[in-house]
Length: 303
Image (cartoon, rainbow, N blue to C red):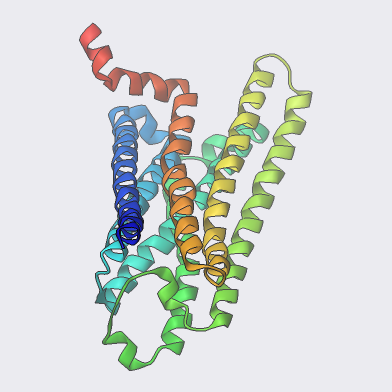
């Protein structure tokens, strides 16, 4: 009996330890993202550059997604049930902002493509006004999967379902197997388009790099590295969108394995990429890094 109690205590302690780790990581990464957002606000010249504006969009969307998804994790862990209408609102934020970052990365790749392959038209196509329109388009395109998922749910759910309380999750709105297939098809279609866009931009920039010389060659090589970084970030986002389908398959095999896989996926493909990739991008840019360095306490003390 003592051995059984010790095993149970260990099993119950693991989720507590995991929950603490998740909260620590979320707080750290939110602080880092807020620091990067403050860096963007601090420098006025960033407010007129399409690249920096789009970068700030990724920071804001990632921070919002981290915050809302962490709320869902806490509610799920403590088995708190909420009204269906409130869960719908939270789901809208989670699904839409899951797509905002990869769509914005695709837009940033196109901005680099225009800057290197069509430099004479860069000022016109990537002006501040055009960037604002682009942000609206990004959110419109990112909201389409959410509209599709909720439309299928509204068409299938009975009126009694809306009066219930539930443990909120995106999977709760998938009532039938065919809805899961439609969601999978939409996700794969989005990333197929984004992957083709990034690959096309990379090939075109590479062609310009081979024909360039001097300062132009350095600029194109830097553009190639930026596109590769965007492709890596997009890969992380792609893996994150595949995680629900992997978890669904694992759930049919073993529930304990499902818990372990879901925890690992949330750490590696939801929390970490939402801060590490923007941080890497921010540190690569010399202008952004200098402003970031000026905000650090050590630099202010040395002055």
